[in-house]
Amino acid sequence: MDLIDLPENRCPAGAVVEMIRAADGISLRCAYWRSLTRTPKGTICIFQGRSEFIEKYFEVIRDLRGRGFAVATFDWRGQGGSDRLIEDGRLGHILDFSHYGRDLDAFMRQFALPECPLPFYALAHSMGAAILMAELPSRSAWFERLVASAPMIELSTKPPAARVMARTLSALGFTRRIVPGWSPAPVALRPFADNVVTSDPQRYGWAAAIARAAPRLAIGGPTIGWVRAAFAIMESLGDPAFGKEWRTPMLMLLAGDDKVVSTLAAEQCAQKLRGTKALVIAGARHEMMQEQDLLRNRFWAAFDAFIPGTPPDYDRAG
Image (cartoon, rainbow, N blue to C red; front, top):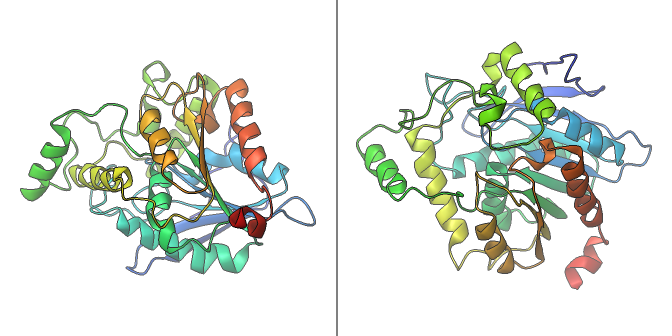
């Protein structure tokens, strides 16, 4: 499946797009771009949040290539240009977040590692950051460093009955049903005035334009199964025992005005992980890479100070 190129959201030149298959047969849309420099600094692998798609990161990809990196990314199963998991493809669905680990393995082994230059760094947002944090302890050799943008450690608000509801309705066989109160309409098409992810109307509009031009890429609300699985991974990340095997140096960049995930929970998680620091960007909403220039500049300044960073051997010895 090709990438969608619009006048208001141009696809960076030189994209290589492939469809690969995970171990369980799910097809995943992948893309990479070579570095603009003769000697690349390495490869940044982008891991999206829930409901996102490759096209939403075109500006970020240009930013990274301008820094001398190659870039590789893909759409998680159930969203973007990858296979849907249930009949109603408008809904975001998963039964267990470990299934996303199959996507990660396929992307790295079949696509990124064979195609892209070493060393590898990860840039993961929200749900993608939660997946990376859960999976990397057993795959620590892949990435020299990880930048986690607003990681989904805990939701900003925790309706007391939500976890119980998700478990109960799942046990009754309703895992493929949409969560009550949500709509199957694309998340990206919600009015800007009602959004909690960015204060920048232009960048918010770019994602909406893609969703209108290619509705097959967009999804709406989550299923009950997805919510149950999300609570399960957040519970594991919040467990005091999580992190004993953590080896990947990580910078958490947290949004000071996040209404989606808990900044405090992420800060507390960072304190227990080896080689991990947390930095709060005051005034930023959840999607910092799609925020206003002033806030994005603070995000990139922190990114630049951390990646590529000191040589891996020195960093890990210290």
